[in-house]
Image (cartoon, rainbow, N blue to C red; front, side):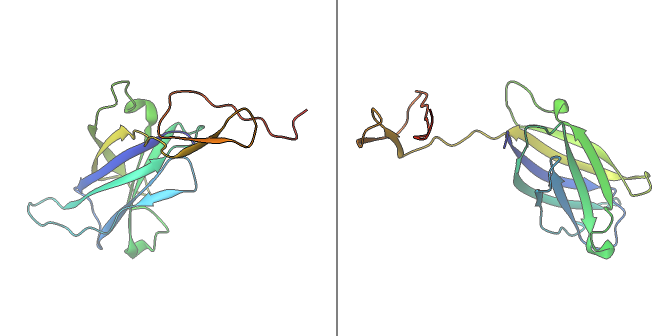
Length: 159
């Protein structure tokens, strides 16, 4: 597994859909993350569906894009209501700050169907605590809390 992205699916507007939609996020993998269903807020003339849901999406090393699919139970997930495929280079930045984006969605026939808003940043890995490290390939083990040192292991059957 490569990098993990923290993606917050914020909302969709101008989405033509009959039933409560949800968003499926995938990164060139069979694994995907899914939001809960959202209801139309009805606050404006335009349809507005809001999630504000945070997803942790694992990016395989070979991944070059990420796909947002807005789906609805009316299609029984056979066809997405709207799709946006976005190159990772569009939002991976060295400063690793949370950035908000909006992309046009296209339906199954390629017609415009709404806009999706989301925020992205690279997730910071949690430090490993309680790691057990072998000392001098003997039977002694030392427990450490955190370390910046590199540990190299060689299997016993190695020649």
